[in-house]
Image (cartoon, rainbow over all chains, first blue to last red; front, side):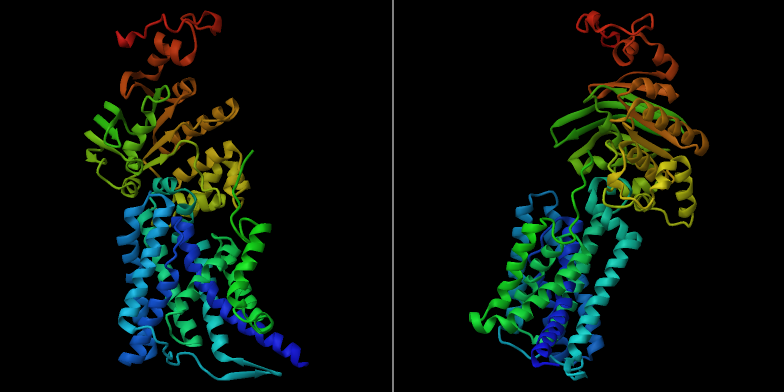
Amino acid sequence: MSPDLTLVLQLLIGGVAIGGVYALIALGFVLIYKATDVLNLAQGEMLLLGAYVSYGLIAQIGLPVPVAFLITLAFSIVLGITIERVALRPLIGEPAISVIMVTIGLAILLRSIVIGIWGTEYRVYPDVLPKESAQIGPLSVSLEFLWSFGIAMALVALFALAFRYTRVGIAMRAVADDQQAALSMGINVRFVFATSWVIAAIVSSIGGILLASIQGTGILLATLGLKALPVAIVGGLDSIIGAAVGGVIVGVLETLSAGYLDVPLGGGVRDVAPFVFLVLILLVKPYGLFGKERIERV
Amino acid sequence: MLALNNVEVMYDKVILVLKGLSLEVPDGRIVALLGANGAGKSTTLKAISGLLRTEEGEVTEGSVELDGVRLDRLDPSEIVRRGVFHVLEGRRVFEHLTVEENLLAGAHTRRDGGINGDLAAVYGYFPPLGERRSGTAGYLSGGEQQMLAIGRALMARPRLMLLDEPSLGLSPMLVEEIFRIIRRINQERGTTILLVEQNARAALGIAHHGFLMEGGRVVLEGPAETLRANEDVKEFYLGLTAVGEKRSYREVKHYKRRKRWLS
């Protein structure tokens, strides 16, 4: 195999792996938008908090990884319920712009909490995933990448199936379609709202742990969380499959542009590429790749 | 039996919409609630099903009771669990869900295992739904969507169904079909039905009893036959003259005729 091809494949694998994690984070974003019509701009900070809490439990308190993971999950559930209860529920029925402002405030608050407790310096995340590499032909693939991609995709598939076939899943989609009609079936809309925030908090915590174990823990993780925004929009804001595909596309775009364009163009292209792609996609498909089309009967 | 006693409903704490409304719906009957636009018919149904609160409305006086238990302080989901199901005006199917998923959403409060049997029963009442069970509900025709809205209610096995304008926007033939099925549901399953309608002729055709609303109050009530024979009802709601013939619009002098119940 030529060195060129090896490089492309190497970049592709890295991109797909990181894209899987983006997809997971975007899933939380999509769920909240679908069920409650809220654009949650604090998604990145929820991720940050999850990553730091698990870091604190493993590296600072010294708990074994599985225990720390479970405590982090429990923490995310409490976080999701609290956010919905305290910050969002009083705003039901208020204009979208007020709700979005609240999520920005929430982002600042969560970030400040993290900085207050852990400071801003970069920390090495403990090894939760295997660090070795597997040799596939001429390619060396980090097991860490494989694991995080596998975990992320398994979770995305799990949630997609649950959304499609379970009672709660149908109730969540019903609420997304028509809240009052859902209420008239006896569906508890508040429960659905709380559930979507809890799921969002869980997936962003897990996403945070995966990203942190690949890249280390730093305050910049939050900006990675913001990548969920183009991922979700590319896929269509309300589609879970869209989030999965969008995540992989954005991940691959990032690594490819980092590999090929950063040197000739002077760096930073990896952060811009997803947004350029986003603009192009929206020009062609305004609902995103898999977005729900507005149903119009004539 | 459902009983509304002297119910007052206020929107936004200022707008009084129902002004002391009382009515009774005996078990196993079809009761029609008739009236012009803005008479308060839909508000009455929302006061029963608890959906009023989603629109900043509340019951400020009086009570809504089902077999003596007050409903007007309960959550909508609790009211559904007690067997009262509100089929909203304008069909309101979940457009992006399939027909079957819509029906399953209707069964949301059910915990027993009879759901599959009930799906079959709904497809029995409404064969077009069975043919399109995995189709997207948003692309059904208006009549099929109304069938889905009623079928979705059946999935909850309600004792009392509140139907808000099932004839809205449907062709006369479809209206007839839907009303025939409503009567069948009442006869075969013993479901009590409170039917809100503008189409007084169709509603009084299947109802046992009727209430006529105007300005947030009941102004006339009686067995359906009596209402059908009432001069004022004929004139203002059925569009017939005293002799029972269709009237020409040339002769309409609405302003001269005074409704007798206003006297």
